[in-house]
Every structure is written in C-alpha cells, then in structure tokens.
Image 1 (tube, rainbow, N blue to C red):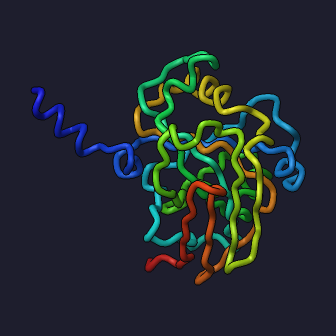
Image 2 (image 1 turned 90 degrees about the horizontal axis):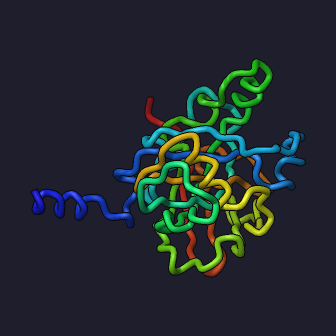
Image 3 (image 1 turned 135 degrees about the vertical axis):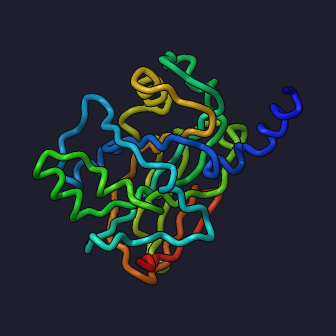
Amino acid sequence: GLQSCRSMAASRPLSRFWEWGKNIVCVGRNYADHVREMQSAAPSEPVLFLKPSTAYAPEGSPVLVPAYTRNLHHELELAVVMGKRCRAVSEAAAMDYVAGYALCLDMTARDVQDECKKKGLPWTLAKSFTASCPVSAFVPKEKIPDPHNLKLWLKVNGELRQEGETSSMIFSIPYIISYVSKIMTLEEGDIILTGTPKGVGPVKENDEIQAGIHGVLSMKFKVERPEY
C-alpha cells in the first residue's frame, strides 16, 4: 500500500501538473481594460468556462489552429495551480490550497466565439479545442510572494501585443478560488486561469508567440496547422 502510494506521488510531480492535472477552469472578463476592448459589460461575478486536459500544450509543442477558425486570438493569463483538494473554501483560507503558478495562453477562436455569443451558446468550440492552453513551467508559490503584483507580457514575432499588471484584476485570486470551489470541487493539479489584460489579437500559421511574467519566467510557442 504505502509503496504504491509513494510511487503514485512520484509519478505526479506538481512541476509537471499538465501531465496529470484534470481540470482547467477559466475566468472570462477579469481585467476592466479587456472588458472595454471586447465591448462587454463588467461582470458582477466571475464568468467561468472549462477547457479539457487535452488543451494543455507545454513548451516545445505547437499552438494548433483549429480547422474551423479564421481568427485565432491569443489571451495571456496568470494561472493558479492547486496543491490540494478544495471544496467551498473561504476567501481567507483560499491561498493555503495554492501550490504555485504558471503562465498560460487561453487561445480563442474569436470568430466562433462571436457566433456563440450571438446565438447564446456555450463557448466550448471557441475555447476548448486541442492545444488551446499553452502552458509555461511551474512556478512554486514561494517564488511569487504576491500574485497581484506581477507584470505579464506577450509578443508576436517580436512585437509587443499584451502587457498587463495583475494588480488590475477585477476579482482577486482568493475570491476566484473561493467562488469556483463553491461550484465545483478543485483537486491537486487543477488550475484556474485568471483572465486576460487588454491587447488580445490574432495569430496565424508560422507566427512565434513569446510571453512572460516579468522577472520570473518566459516561454515561446510556434503556431501550426494540425495535420488533419
């Protein structure tokens, strides 16, 4: 029993959460400047949607353009990685459940999303396709004493597109964790993407996306069309 328990833990290192973590919970509309650029109404509570675990694209694998979109956008987001099972936690206790952070891209088929919005349909086709969640290396919590004091940036082919400060979030990270945990149980290795600042825009085949958390990490991805 104990031995198999140990090997299980060894095969599930948080440093590679994308290989075994199950849930990717995303918050839409969490920066006022992005709400304005999308001409959306400011939310009174977080807008949530999910991506499947097959959305993960770790560094070294490409960002894939789904065959059904003509307008794939980058959305740069700080992700919170959960360190233990978490159900209906208070805002005050929420950070105790965090193991660390990562930088993610919420790749979005904007033309498809616009259609979904018009029809009042879920955003699944626009947000939840294979490789729609490029992900950086894991950053342990100790390396980021204040997640609300970070600068995020994104470049396409060397040109700066997105720059944002996590201090401008509408809903704080403890609030988001508490809110999500009251709806769905979060487990170790699950992540929450906390929304994107302004400057979202299109990428196309062969583009190179570079992104980073200032002073913490950076990552890069090539955009490709899938083989099928």
